[in-house]
Amino acid sequence: MVYVSTTIGKTTTYFSNASLFNFYCRSKNLVDDIFGSGASSGRSLLQARKACRVNFENFKNYTILTGQCKGPKYAPKVCCESFKQFACPFAEEISDLTTDCANVMFSYINLHGKYPTGLFAKHCKEGKEGLDCGYY
Image (spheres, rainbow, N blue to C red):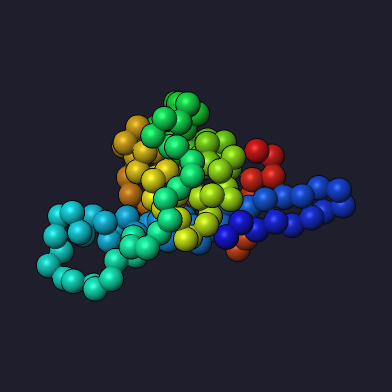
């Protein structure tokens, strides 16, 4: 869900914390599915999701993120700011939990940046509304 608030002539869009959290949960389930946890949870959270309309495979510039957010220490302020620069233009699509956009986006981010699982979900929090995408 994308949260929008209005402040006298200014509309602010938020990238939902729920989409970060849900991706983190789905990615843990995906890893369990790939490497076999031995437990069957029944219906997968990845089922019945609509395809993402954003083509993250051919996205123009992952260096917005990978050029700034570097390990091994992954400075939270730098990583979160570069994540917002990368993700906020797609906040509406990524926050739509009926699509696979968050999963696809994070898969390609991790392919290009090889980030630890949950890095952005753990460190990028700006309140209950989610990440403030008002400037992007």
